[in-house]
Image (cartoon, rainbow, N blue to C red):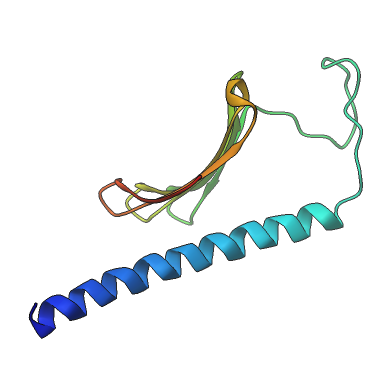
Length: 120
């Protein structure tokens, strides 16, 4: 193996390690925020109107150019938090599939949209 090949391999490992550390930091931050939030009870009736609560199927965060950079949404079968790069390629997915027991799944994707890391 040449020095150049070894260097490329190490750079790839470093990129993956950085992505993993970012995921851990993201999850840790989410846990800290969730722990700091007061316990909330869900209303008995889904049609109940409550002042101060926003209800929607999805939210998009856009940059100053109007490009979607993040999406938070829910359907009957899943909830998802997705982060996009500047080309609107999805890069990070945190999903919860309701029919599969509600277990969360975290995906990191490269520039081409291929999964480079997934947990579990």
